[in-house]
Length: 165
Image (cartoon, rainbow, N blue to C red):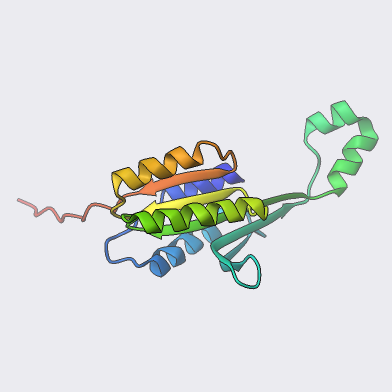
C-alpha cells in the first residue's frame, strides 16, 4: 500500500495559492479516491493528546492468503493467514515553502518523535518553493531512516490557454 500512497502523492499538483490546509484537503481527497475501498484516510490524525499528524492512513485487507503462504505453510498455514487481516498504515506530514532553519529543525524533531512512537512509515511532503539547502539537509537526515520517505512537489506551472489561429 505504501507504493500506492506515494504514487498518489507524487501525482498531486500544488498551486501557489494553496495553503497547507488546502493542500492537505487536496491530498486527502486524492487518497480517498485512489486507495482501496475500506482505507481510512484521516485528516489531522491524532497521534496522542498533544500531537497530530497531517494525515493518517489505515487499511486492513482481509482475503485469501497469497500462494506463497499456501505452499510454505501448507493448508493450515494458508487458512490461518487468510483469517488474519493484513494491516497497513502510513502517515503524512506536509510542509509548505520550507526555507528557514528553525522550520527544518522542527520538522526533523517531528520525524524523530513519530519514529520513536511508531508512526511509520512516514511520508514527508514538501510543496512549493523549498530552499535547496533545506531540502538537502532533510534528505541527508532521512537517509538514516528507512521508514521515512521524502516527496518534494514544486508548484504546478500555470496553465496557458493557446489561442486558435
